Image (cartoon, rainbow, N blue to C red; front, side):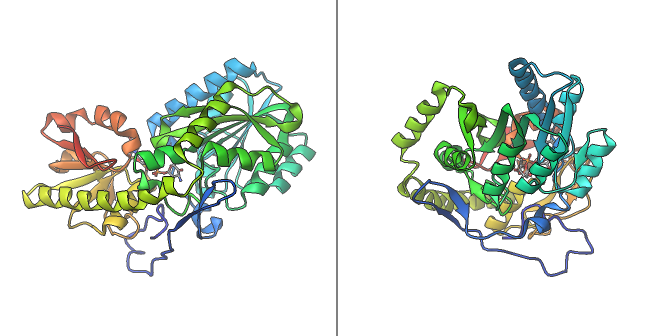
Length: 389
Ligand code: DWN
């Protein structure tokens, strides 16, 4: 499997394309799921194709999260909020609008340039315990540290989490959002397994990770973003904060499901093989009826799904995506061109498969004109089907 965000220019198309094994294993001690290997983080993240602000639902989601934290913590101008993996400032900008000091940390220099241009102070670095201690040495300690969709991405995850503990104030809170392994398995979200995501968490395994590194979970929520995620609040273990009942309740659900046993995951691979067969049949039947098919969202998930299916531009003619960096480039591994969303009405394909299925409702609503003109939207998981038109 090629790295899922390694979109390629026309000039790069015929260059050798790196591919890596994509195998998931489970720790029998703490139930942590992880890849057996993944490319060096510098190769994946120092120039990055994903700009969070190019997904309006992500910006809206971030705004409501900030509103919740502000209501809970009563932050003011003396407080500092740090976001690790702050991307283009899609979340921190909302704290700035409320007069709170912010600092972003993200290794993707091309994305950090956008954040800085938008006025969000950001350091283009990987977050580590060493950096955390440097920040503390500069008097930069955080009342809130956010880590959205990054806990899965960091091979050196113990160093990362111990760094969070080191940069929090005594009563600071660590707010984490990370995809939930239970949703991944129950909703067959196999296309969210790719090399950027080294780890796949249950509450059990993320609690073990945090407690190993000086943090304690104080509450947990299941949230729908990105196909189903956990939102976890944690504090330094020496703060001895009370633990909300939501933690014990979800741990019990996981035990009853058997999420700490291999059998919970063993049928997953077979169910995915069945789904891939259904997807191939679904798409080839529509092609056999002469229907033209395009994609919506050059999402990392889409690259995994297309490579797993082994289909290219003969089936999916093009993919539309709002991200300027991706437009004019090609989906990794399958040479499908990525173009601007305006091409949808210009070219009017009969069908559009939504690869960014986690945002399907927002996409269908935004592209109502395409449906009004007779277009049909499809989604691939947990089973291939028509969702609009
Ligand atoms: O963890 C990660 C998640 C948070 O984001 C990263 N490893 C990489 C990335 O994964 P993804 O690319 O599968 O995420 P999305 O958010 O499903 O990607 C959406 C893609 O679709 C983006 O390239 C933007 C695009 N898009 C669009 O063009 N128009 C999205 C929406 C909602 C739209 O209206």
